[in-house]
Structure formats: C-alpha cells, structure tokens
Image (cartoon, rainbow over all chains, first blue to last red; front, top):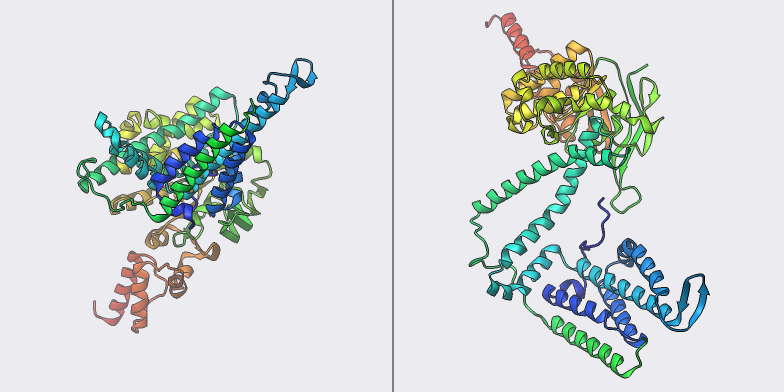
Length: 269
Length: 287
C-alpha cells in the first residue's frame, strides 16, 4: 500500500529542486497543454526532447519515473489499441471488422506519446517539489481568487494538512488491521459483500481516530493563536532567482518552437 | 515438548530494498505451558516484531515457530486458528474498538471463531470479569467509556477467545499508577486461575520483576538473555549497557550490599527487600 509513487517527493539536489514552485506549477500546466497541441512529428519531437531534458535535469533516478509509468501502462496500451482502429482512410491491414489505417497508427503513436509525456512532466514536478512547497505555491497562484471571496489560504491549509496525514493514516490502518486480524478478522476471503463487511472493524476505529486527531490538531493550532489567513506572514518568502528567469526563457522558446513547427510543417491529420 | 518454540527466527523489513532492516535476528527459545514470560528491551530492539511473529501476523523471513510441536506456517490457510490459540493484545488496544456495545466488541473474536451464541455470551461475561469491567458497562457504547475502561474492554476482547498463550504488548502504557497496578494484578490472577501461558512485553522493569517467572532481554534484534527474573536482574551492568536498568528496589539492595551489609542478592520486590532488611536489623539488635 505504501508503494504509490505518483506524487512522491524524492529528496536530492538539482536545478529542478531549487526552482520556484510557482514557476514549476505554471510550467507544468503550460507543458501539458503544449503536449496536446502537437500536430506533427516535429512538434512532438520538440516536446519529447523537453521531457528528456527535464527528466535528466531532475537528478531523480530513471527507475522512479519508470515506476510511475508502470501505474498507467495499461491505460496507455488500451487507448493506443483503441486508437489504432479508429482512423479514416485507406486500410493497410484488415481482418473481420478491424481496419488498421495509416491515420490510426499515427493516432496510436500520438496518444501513447502524449500520455507518457504527461505522466513524466507531472512526476518530475512531484519528485522535485515537496507537498508543502506545492500547496504553498498553489496558495500564491490562487491569491487573486480572494477577490471572489474564496478562502484561498484555508483551502491551502486543508490541503497541507491532508497531505501531512496520508502516511500517518496509512500507518494507522496497518496497525488496526493487524489488531483485528489478531482477533480473527478475515479480510482476504469471501465475496464482495462479506469483504466490505469485514472492513467495518477497520474503518470505524480509523474514523474515530481521525476525528480525535483532527480535534487535537485544532486545539494545538488554536493554542498557537492560529486564526486563518488574515494578516499572516510567512517564514519562507518565495522569490524569483536568475535560474527561474532562465527557465522561463527556455519554456517560452519551447512554446514558440512547437507553435512554429505546427504552423510551418504539414499536419498529420 | 515445549508449548512454543522458536528456532533461528529472523525477520527482515523491506527485504531487498535499500531500506532493508533486520528487526529480529536468529532468535531461539522454548516456552513451557503455564509460564509467565516477560520481554524487555529498549525501543526498536525487535520486541513487537517478535511477538507479532508468534501469532502468525508476520511471517518469519527465516526460521520456524512451533506450537505444540507443529510448525505454525505448515498450513498457511489455517493461520487464523493459530491466532485464536495465541492471543495478541497490541499496544494501545483501545483504538481497535468498533462495535455498538462493549459486549458486542468483546464478542468479535469468539464470533470469528464460529462458537455458538450461548458459549459466546458466557465468554464475554467471564472475560469482562477477569479484567474487572463492571457488567453494567457491557451494554454501553465502547466510545463512552473512560480510557482505562476502554483498555480493559479491548483486553477482554482477546481474553474472550480463551487463547492458550496470551501476549500483551505494553498493556499498562499510559495508565495512571493505580490503574497499572490493578491491571497487572488482574492479568496475573487470570494467569493463575486459568493456568495459561502469558507473555508480557513491557518497559517497566518493576512490572516484569513482580510478575514474571522468566525474562527475555532483546537488544539490537537479538535475544541476549533468557533466564529467571532473578538472574537476569542480577546482571545489572550488562542491562544498563543495553539501555535498560534493574528495578529500583534491586539497585538499592545492590548498593547496600556494596556498602558491606550482608543481604541477599537479586531482590525483585519491595516486600522481599523489607523482609530482608528487617531480618538483618533484628540480627544486629537494632530493631
């Protein structure tokens, strides 16, 4: 249960680790949009080169990225196969109701490449940014929304707390499961209904202890005079450095490159 | 034949990964029917891992555990039967309560055993009596009980399975001094009345010294000593090298002996110490 790589920080030092988290989030969104705006092999190549550069710069072992790809490999395969038979034009291979066309093959390649790029980009962000930095950056990025009376700070605080307690709750679940197994709980056999019923002895104590933790945390926060976002200053001020401006420039160049490729080279579809 | 034996028991966490960590290393022991065993060791010495292997919650990486001469992992599908025979009460067991009433919660184990209703009710009442839970509490919600009562209810839930071996991991942690003494006395009485084997994991040398026949000392994943409480606690220097200590009363008597007063070594309880000192004073004519 603890082997979920998607969204796990990998502690080491690299340029990507030191970049401003706000910039990383904005870049991620831009790159994802960009990945889906590639209409020929040339622009796809530019994006692929960018992905490789990002992965290499992150200093995170390739094994970690492969692990996060493993989670979605089935989705990639299924969508690619579906796309393979989903193209118009002259069939190059035909069997029963299945027709494989050149457009279908291109479709499959693009879909596959896009999903892989998407996962690699987002993994690069989560590997190089601590969850706390992420929520901090999100809070800053969403600050303009306070105009619409959206409690941005409170939302960010909730996200931070939720992230903080994921490992704690996993550990707690393990403990309670062991305790109930010691009393003869059987969670591995039986049909769906008996299995769901077998989870009640785990879920009830888990809920109870979550509420207890929430209450204790609230008291602890109030003891330290927490009263929401108003007038709150920060210990860690986010500032843009030279490397952040360089990253911005490179990103803009890549965007320009993809757009130029799309305009001046023939589209596949 | 011993009731419970371990041979070359090893447990390794996350084997094969960079986080590999040996929690229990080559442990051997034999426990006889009707013994009261204490397990001591500082935090992270492998006590909890060891006891979780004894009832089949963790499968040893290497080595065997035999219960009544049969390897407990001989039939992995029937490991639940082993868990009914070797009852394990975890640390802070009150966090496992979940039913609507205390009686139903205590009945969870026996129900899983597939006993008939009458037998279950009988066991619930008896288990509650053993841990000193008043019968009017049985129909209450476990979440309305006080901390100490919750602890008792949870322990009763394991006792109700009537295990041959009862393992308690720090049953007294977080209780007030009076509550500790009462709970410990109840566990001891349970052991005396039923004649069951009890294994008590504890950080309190005093508790272990008062109730246990034999004591296991765990240090850095190894079983360093396994002997009578008296001989374990007469090796005070070795114990303090492992981050443990002897009961306070034992060290007081030891310093008196060092000061030249002829007392018996290895005294474990205050009562015995008082007896020895008064005897000495009478002999000297000072009392």
